[in-house]
Amino acid sequence: MSTHDLDALESREDLEMAKTAQRCIVKALDHSKALSIALLEDGVERIEGAPTLKLPPRVLRLFADMLGNLAQGKAVAVMPKDMDVTTQQAAQMLNVSRPYLIRLLEEKKIQFHMVGSHRRIHLSDVLEYKEKRSQKSKAALAALIEEGQELDEDDQL
Image 1 (cartoon, helix red, strand yellow):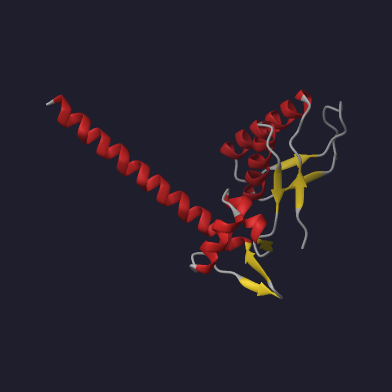
Image 2 (cartoon, rainbow, N blue to C red):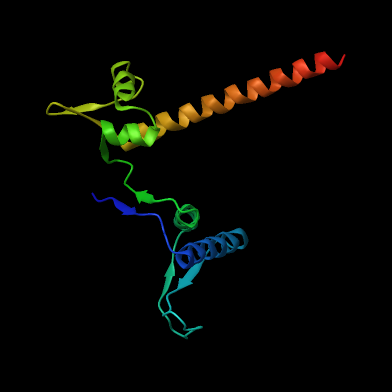
């Protein structure tokens, strides 16, 4: 299994190319179910018989998301979901400290397994925990907004 990292784009030209490519893919996906991409040399308009790629819409959405992040100057990484990560990597993905992550593991809030004396976590379990945490945060925020609106209505009476 391999992972692929792409550091943040630094040149203004590269950022603009990423932004333009993302917009083109998103626009094309909005109007079509199937999409082919022609591979052309820089500066060439269109060549009949140029190599083309036919990719599933989900893959193109992934490309669009990656390009969007790159256009914002963010680095991206692509990893298989069945890959194991270290506790340090998982902590970084969750934006928490490693000791806090260890506590989550010990409280069985995230599954893990041992490789020798080291804890390893399936990437899919880290992402699942992150999604659940995000949903809880959104629900709590929605409840606070609703409560604030009710209080505001009471004050107006």
